[in-house]
Image (cartoon, rainbow, N blue to C red):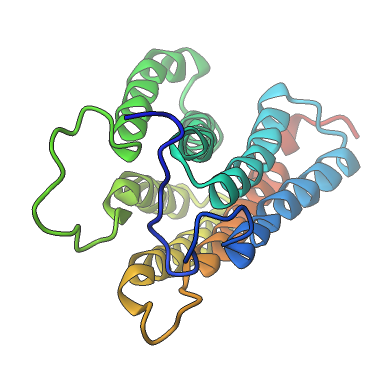
Length: 231
């Protein structure tokens, strides 16, 4: 498999042209807007935590990587798409263990290796490496199964946040509901091309941008970053 091999898995793409997916490509602006909103709020609150700003930068990187994938649409741009996503997931999970779960930083560092290993495995699966021959039948979930661990993590953090009466609980619940809807749109995209040639993948981008915006705002407004920020 060459890095320049084309990838055509979305309704909107009907050719190999750079702008064959204009809506899918431009809808990635939602991630950039989420990062900008978070940056403005963090600056306003005087938050200087490197971890908070790393998450903000990673959110913007998701939008850039996904834009590359929906324009170049090949194997290397697929990696540019998935790597920022799973990097954000790994770092957010570690941050949430401390910010929401109250886990000591040392213990968070201990489980960090496991989280990173899981993210690498998900990335390996997502890019099709090491999966062996292609399955005889299409994936009924259209590749959405790779995101179930992220969904499970949000469910767990939602339960913990409400159990601990964390002020960010409503934000996390809103993010969970948003992600559930966005995952549905991603799953449906391949199967409705005839009825809706544009597809629904763009809705996955828009709603995921909103989900990440909610998570970042939760961290900035109610997490330990907010509690320790200078006034």
